[in-house]
Amino acid sequence: MTKPSLTHASRMTGLGRLTPSLAILALAVSGCAVGPDFHRPSAPTVTGYTSTPLSPDTQFAWGQDVSAQWWTQFDSPALNTLVDKALKANPDLAAARAALKAAQQTYYAQLGAFLPQVDAGYNVARQQASGTLAPPLNSNDDLFTLHTAQVTVGYTLDVFGGLRRQTEQVKAQTEQQRFETEAAYLTLTANVVATAIQEASLRDQVEAAKAVIASDRQILDVMRRQLTLGQIARADVAAQEAAVAQAEETLPPLEKQLAQQRDLLADLTGSFPSDAPTEHLDLATLTLPANLPLSLPSKLVEQRPDIRQAEANLHAASAGVGIAIANRLPNITLGATAGGAATQFSKMFDSGNTFWSLSGNVAQPIFQGGALWHRQKAAQALLDQAKEQYRSAVLAAFQNVADTLQGLQADTRALTAASVAQASADESLTITKRQLELGQVSGVAVLNAEQTYQQAVLALAQARAARYADTVALFEALGGGWWNRQA
Image (cartoon, rainbow, N blue to C red):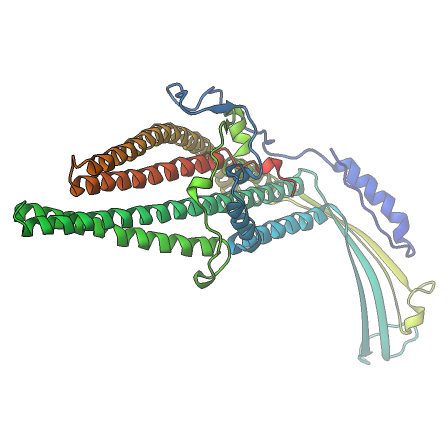
């Protein structure tokens, strides 16, 4: 363990000879830190995330590392630009970075407790001594000016490790803030990507809904003409009018969601809604990674910022127990003072005008109403709380990954079904149009087939968006690759 030493740069008379003695005394009484020594919790022994084997429909690369810029795997320049804008201008991330800098500076300040505290002072006083008392000066002058300059050195011996535990706690709190910043970084990038994908999906859904409405209206026009010719009943027209109204009801909510996604994207990139980013994603141009990375369960606890944050909190709570114990034990401080005093400024350090002193102080708490004992018990309870919070964070992380994996497998099946439905509806529409050319069906049949096709397009856009969104969620659930980022 590092032995504390007393250093003193002053070469004033007397004090320089005392410094080695102070250092020897400090070495003689130094000891180990009280309280529990922190050890990182062991990784869970589970070998998988889900209770059932993963479906082969979705390809996962077990043990593959996560890229620090995972969003680039979608091969979208517009998406990359949006993320870059957010990382540069988002105020929440900037605030987290500032908080991290403050925590780091607090830690550096705490390191100063291991060094001697040196203060220099100068005092000048004009005094008139009472004639009743003996003159304070050798010259017997009652009126004089006294110049005094001195250097004071103080040092706290960390005998029981209280200072070391305090520094350990501050360092752990700095680590906690570091991973809180990493979590903010990960959350921001995931939100930007997810929001951009959802906006692209809503834009496709709006276009598909408009196409369905236009198709429904065309069918209604045809049916109204047929009603005039007496070919169909009024009830058939009324049913189609209801279908048109229902289709029109779906459009305003989609347009509302689309506008709100644009506003959210502006906020995430540090812009006002009136200055929303001009970049737009197109779902058709996005590339879905062929093999998605899947970290080993034993690695997840090292990669998730929230778990590492809970671990740092556990470390800080462990150090807090040592601090509480050390506060109940003796506190030993050393002090030294050297200086000079004279009635003339230039003669303060002349022979006979200098002075020095060496002091040592031991303070042992005797009775404080049980406060220190209860504070130690409180620190131990906080340590128990931090242990359970860490365990909760680990369980939540594994649930998060498991839910995402289940979602991806369901998305894969849904996307496959939606693609088949869209292809079938497209083929049906083509066949119906040919039948119309041959006079085998009416125009209403074509419009119905076209409506079915547009609805299939709408469902496919939703299925694609869900698949992309859960892919983003997987990258986020695995920690986002922050450990591969240089800065």
